[in-house]
Image (tube, rainbow, N blue to C red):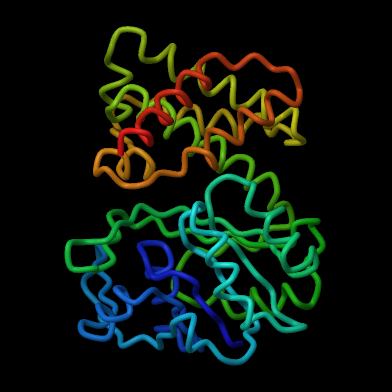
Length: 304
């Protein structure tokens, strides 16, 4: 299977490297700066087990040729429009596109551009970041990759994807209910991002502050009400696990959006929080805490 990994940041770099090390035909589509960096130093993985380096196959948008069987999109959500332009020449009649982005807005955007039959569901769970020299740092052993047909019908095309991904030395989950997995990932990351960005701290600091637990639970409840109104078929055991994970004061957690914000970077405010508010408005739901978070993030973006 010919695989194009759109992006070689922490997520794309890690999972793409695992695929390449497992013998899959993987090409990384990257920008000029990352291209030069990877050409010079290779793709370096620093994991709890040690360090590995590979010389990846690289491409830039201007040099992209031929169609790919699978395109895995791993960029930030605000870069999606440009990436769709970049990958267009690589999309053929049999190509499947698997986005690993935050939120859910990107699914409809990709379907409108390339067709509903080409987009499959995907998400990952990993604690990883890029180091100062562009190395991919896996901070904990967690490295889960979920994928499946959005309608739950994992046909022969999806079986081929599973065959390519399942032996890549990560914890793969071939799901027949990927939409619920996507809703629950959004519930987790948006609650985490909202409270960390609003309070400017990690969950341990928030939960040990006066009113912190009530803030987290209030944000969680608002988001759960929105995604349920939008079609999420609530799985009580799953949502209880998410709330329990977020509410553990012994484990300090932050979101990638919070980490980007503290470094002065662009953030996925519209995709992670703003889209929830649009969906809440559609159902006339009151979401005062989410609104406060959104105002906070918009002010940050104005001041950048």
